Length: 338
Image (spheres, rainbow, N blue to C red):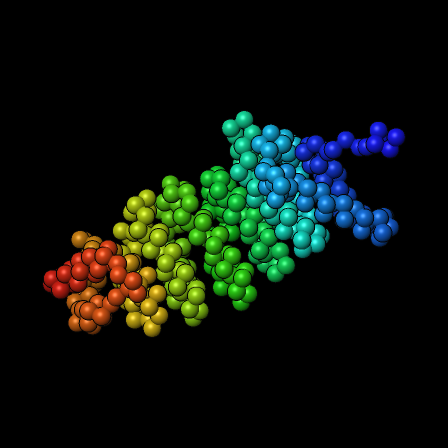
């Protein structure tokens, strides 16, 4: 007889609704509830979030079912479940935070009737980005919010909001935090913001060129931290060598101060920093409209530069690098003072 009264399996929408109800309880603080009851609710929400993750990712026995994923996604964004999950994250235990991070990340890619409805939701609730970015200031939450943040900025409109906000200035501090894991995570988000959406990045650099590169040079390229310098010079090459950013590149390679910074990086003992610095330095050398002060510095340092490049090699044979180096040497050798 017992089997006649088995409960029906929960639908994806049921899982979301029950999760939402529990998150509302957690968000309210549940102060008038006994501790044992609160613990029970926390256990329930942990299981539900794990179940949501299983629907979206599948498990060792089964692949995710697209219809179930669509139902779950639709219900998730129909009301404020995402907001509740982000706000309640500090109150969840570590494993549940990890599961919640994976759920939020996956939902950014889920399409319902060929639409990324997560993007529509975030555009209307853009202040959630403020909460996630501020998460870098909390050691326990930074890596969870950081992973969510990188998935959310896959949406161009969301990335534009972050680029145009005051938060961009904060990244120069987050990247230099003493906690290595958090600093690396912030650097990964910073790179994503400055490389994923080409037209938005080009617009950002043209509007914010002066303060952005002043901060970039002083706080990252001239940092006392080796890893910060290495990541920064590599990213600078990625930015300036992207055709979409040609206006910013032309401006950057016309500055004597920028050239001095790059020449100092070329003299570093680290081979990897030297190589990445070379990829930016070659843009200065290749510029056919070099200002007189840049020509002057290159001519003054010509013999040192040519000696440096004579022994300059990558660890593995690289034909493109050798071709670039030959062009740079040729340009510098042929320079005449203006």
